[in-house]
Image 1: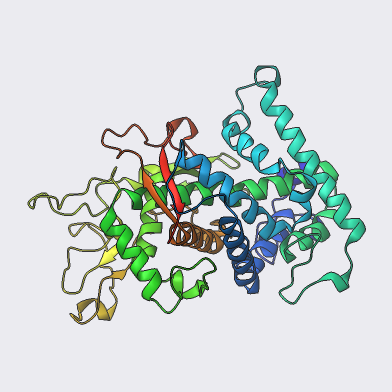
Image 2: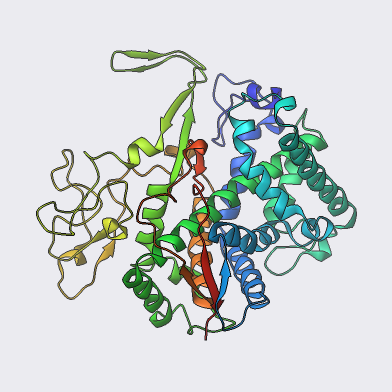
Length: 443
C-alpha cells in the first residue's frame, strides 16, 4: 500500500513540484500513460478486432439450433458468453487455457465484490469470497510466471499482441511494474486482476442491460438491427459477420442506446483528494488528503438537468428512472430535443449545424453533460479505458443480437428486475432477480 499512498507526483509527465518520488516509483503516471497509450492508439483497434473475432467464434459454436431453447437467466447467459473472449482479447489464450474455471470464478468475485470494497466483512464472515479471490490471484500469478518464461520478441504478431502476455498493454505493465519498489509478484497479480475486473465486469453488465432494454422495445430493436445491416459497417446478419468497428460505434441509434444504458444502470463514486494543500471552494475548505466522492447516479437523475420529454402529450413523458434512448438525440428543428432540459439554466449549448437541416436525421449529442453524465469519472483522471468500453459494449450488443434471436419470457411490467442497489457505487449495477428468456440461432 505504501507504493500508492506515497506517490504524490500526479499523472502529468512532469511530477508535482512538491513531490520527491523518483521516476521509477511514479506508479500513477506510468500506469495511466500505458493504459491511455494503448486504448487511444492502435491498441483500441487491435483489441477490438480480437474481441470481435473471439466472440463470433464463441457464438458460432453454441449448442443452439433454429428451434427455441428456454433459458432461466439472460444475465448469466451474457456473462458466460462474453467473459472468455473479453479476457483472451487482452491477456491472450494462456490464462484461460491454464485455468478453465477462471470465467466462473471471475463472476463469483464480481458477485462478492462488495465484501472487499465496502470493507465491513472480515475474512471469517465471508471465507468463500476470500478463497475465490486467492484462487484468481494465484491463477494470474501463474500466468505471469509462464509468460515470463516463454515470451520472446519474435513472438510479437503484426498487431502487437503475442500468445503469452496477450496485448501490448499487459506486456508493458510487466515491464514498468517490475521496476516499482515494493511491488512483488502478489501485488502485480492484484494489479492485473483489478484491471480485468474494472474493464470487463462493468462493460459486460452494460451489454446485458442494453440487450434487455432492446428486447422490451421491438421498434427500437428493429431500428438497431436495421442500422447494423444497412450501414456500411456490416455485411448482413450472417454466421461470420464483418464489422467496421469505428463506423459501428458512431451510429445514431446504437450510440444513444449505449449512453442511456450507462446513465440508467451505472453507479460509481468519482474519488478525488487534494494531495498538496487544502482545497477552497467558495466558503468551504476541504482539508489536504481528505477524500472527496462525487456520486454519478445522483448526477444522472438530476431533474433540473436532464430532458424528460413532454408531460402535455400522451406517451411523450419519460421519467429519469426509465430507459429512453431518444433522450440523447437532437432532432432537426426541434429545440426541445436533446439530453438537456430546454429550460435548463446556464450557457447555451451549441448544436450541430445539421441539426436544423430537415434533410438530416436525428443526431447523437453529449455536449453540455459535463458534470451530469460522469459514468467514467471526469477531468483529466476520467477512466482511460472509456473508448474501449464503448467499443466493447456496442460490439458485444451487435454480435449477440445479430447472430442470435432472443425473446424475454415475460415483460418487466412491475420493475422486479431493476438494478440491485446492494452494489451501489461499485460500477454497472447487476439485475435484481433472474431474467428468463428463450434463444435460437438466427435463420
